[in-house]
Each structure stands twice: as structure tokens, then as C-alpha cells.
Length: 135
Image (tube, rainbow, N blue to C red; front, side):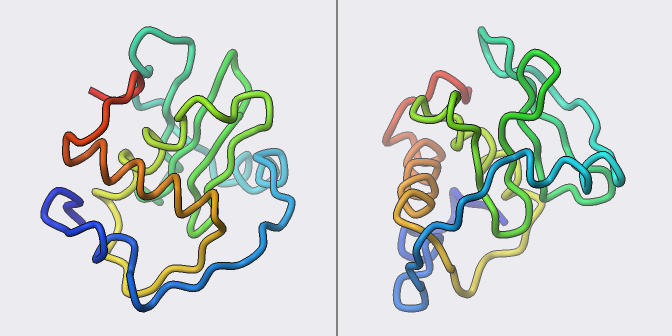
């Protein structure tokens, strides 16, 4: 999918979006699965100790690693970042790294935080918002 060719409404699935309550989810919940299927280093985020990794054989799923520990991921419909790393825009590089390898969505099931994260990534991709984590 090319996010730069989509309107905000298309990307966020206006009219076909369901908001739901967050389920407590942490990157740690996915560690056994990630260790089983593996993930490969892709690149460092600018001026930081954060690394993006791509889930092996699933290019649309990405993992955020800091100091050797998984601290975030965008895996299927789940976008989660460890509490100690939340609030500084790290969802943006996860989303923007994953979406070129995904099909355009026809619907979305998101939390309020997830919707904000997707909207922020769309704005960064369209040059409407800056991100220290994304070129």
C-alpha cells in the first residue's frame, strides 16, 4: 500500500471503522511467537538506540528493539509499545515501515490510541507533521 496516495479517510477507513476498548497488551505477550518465527534487523532509527526489525517471512509486521529488548511491534492488527517507551511518537516508524508491505485496509478495528497513532503516521507520510524517527 502506498499511504501517500491515500486520503486520510481512506487510510483510516472512515465509515468502516470500529472503535473498541483497549485490551492490556504488551510486546512481551508476543515474545514466544517472535522468538519462534524470528525477526531480522532492518535499520536504526535516526539519532537513537532504537532499531527496526522485520518479522521473518512476514514483511508487513515489524518489531522495535531498544538495547536488545523488544519494546514495540506492529503485528497484524496489533500496535503496541512498552509503557516506558510510550508517548514519544514511536508508533510512527512502526506503522510507516509496515504499511508498504501490506494491502490497503477495507476496515479497521482500533482503540482511540491506535486511531491517533495511525492518523499521526498518515500526517508524517504526507509532510503535515514532523517526526524525529522518520526521514
